Amino acid sequence: MAETRKPLPLEFEKPIFEMEAKIQELEELSRSTGMDLNGQMRPLKNKLEQLTQAIFDDLNPWDKVQLARHQFRPNTSDYLDLVFDDFIELHGDRVFGDDHAMVCGLARLDDTRVFVIGHRKGRNTKEKIACNFGCAHPEGYRKAHRFMKFAAKFGLPVITFINTPGAYPGIGAEERGQAWAIAENLMLMANLPVPVICTVIGEGGSGGALGIGVGDKVFMLEHSYYSVISPEGCAAILWNSAGEAERAANALRLTSRDLLKLDVVDEVLPEPLGGAHRHPEAMASDLKDKIKSELGRLQLLSTEELLEARYARFRKIGALFGDEPPRAPIVEEEDSEESSTSEESDPAS
Image (tube, rainbow, N blue to C red; front, side, top):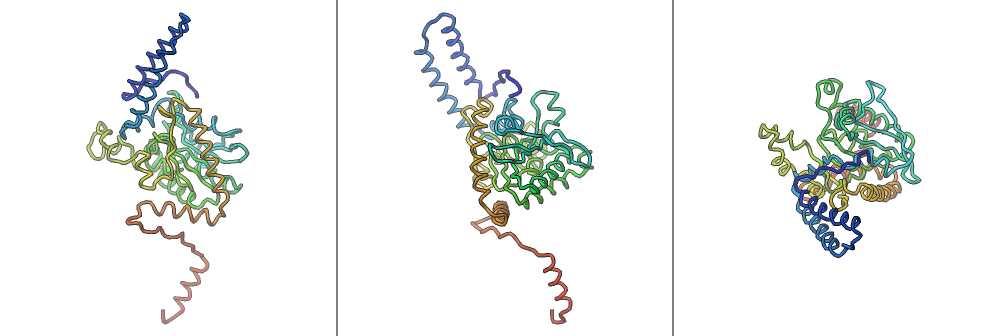
C-alpha cells in the first residue's frame, strides 16, 4: 500500500487502539529487558481479539460509512497490485479527455486475461485532488464505455471495483452529459456478451457507483456501503443539514447486510477482523479467490444464458410478494417492421 503511517482511530476503534498500545508496551519491555512476558501478553491478545469482534459485530450504519471511507482502506489501485498481474492502464475517452477518477486496463487473473475498471480515489492530498476524490466526470464513464466494448470485442471478462461517493456534480460535468454517459453504461453493461463481476470495495454512492455496477454478480465487502445517495446528501435534502448524516445513514438501509436481504447484491464478502484496512493482503487474497471461482462458473454459460440471467437478476430487485421476474424480451427489428406493415395493410386490423 502507498502509505505506512499508522491510521488515526475512528471513535469506536479507540478501545482497540488502547489495548494494542498496552500490548506493544509489554513487547518493547520484553525486547529491552530480555524478560519472557508471554504469560502476561497472551491473555491480553485473547481479550483484544474478543473486544475487536464484539465491537465490529455491533457497528451501526454510520460506523460502516466511516469504515468505507477509512483513509487506509484498500482502494482500486491496491487491488490492482495485490489481485492481478501485468496490469496495463489504457487512457482517454477519445471525446474530451482522460479522467483520472476512472482507471481502466488489461490484466491477468492468474492464467485468465481480463479487463479491469474501477474508481480511483487517490491516497494522498495531491492524488485525491487529481482524482476528484473518486468522483468521475462524463469522460470517465465514456472511457469505461469505450473499453467495455473493447473487452467484448476480444472476449475478455470485465471486473469492476466500485468506490465513489458519487459522480462528479459540477456544472461542467452536467454540460458534458453526465447522466447520459451513465445511462449509456447501464445499457451497454446489461448487454455485454462477456462475464461481468462488480464489487463494492468502499463507498457506493448514487449513479456514480451504478455506472460501472451492472454485472452478472455484484458483491459487497462487509464494511462497504451502497446507496442511492450519500448520507450527507440525503440529510441535506430531508433535514436541510449535512449534520444529520448519521440519521440519514440509519434510514437509507445502505449496509451490506441490508442490501443482501433486498437482493441488490448477490453476496457479502467477509473482511478480516478489524476491517480490510488492517489486513489488506488477506482481504485481497479472499477477493481474488472469490472472483476466480465465480468467473469460472460464468464462463461455462453460453452468451444467451449469461444475458438472460443478468436481465432476470436486475429485474427481480424490488419484486413484491414473490412475483417471478419477466424473461428478457427478444425483439427482432425486421419482424416488428413486417408486423407493423401487415397491420397497416390489413383492413380488418
